[in-house]
Length: 194
Image 1 (cartoon, one colour):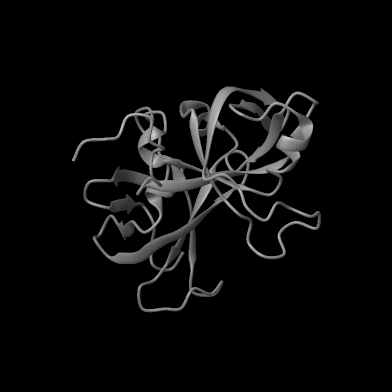
Image 2 (cartoon, one colour):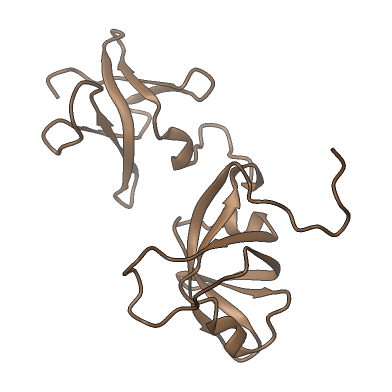
């Protein structure tokens, strides 16, 4: 199938939510985005940001009833704990305010390549976790950012996700032996009685 020249790209199959539009920034149409990662490189790696409306009740301020499905970013930069961006076809504060609350997605394939022994959290979710003896500990249900390092939330396959059933394993070399995204497997130095 041939692409139509000038046609808008469709929603990426590998879309990942990476942030939320907080508000306008300045008077020339810039927007302020709260990134969901401490290092917002994914936002800088793509010039196409896809939008969806917020979940019900997330924002107390009024939001637009319809958002454009795609923003074409012309410039983006860090500004403290947020990212500010200028987007094509938004030239004033009112246009930027109309984007308030939008959830920002980009295709996973647009993320910068992770370095050796670096992983995106989204790639670790759902991976099986076994210890050195080959005993299955469960699957990665989430991660917790403690500041100095991340912690894997591992839930046994045969248990509901409760605090009592999950294991919290520091995602550091002292406990994590290998991570194989291809095999969808993490091997850890972790006993059953921990």
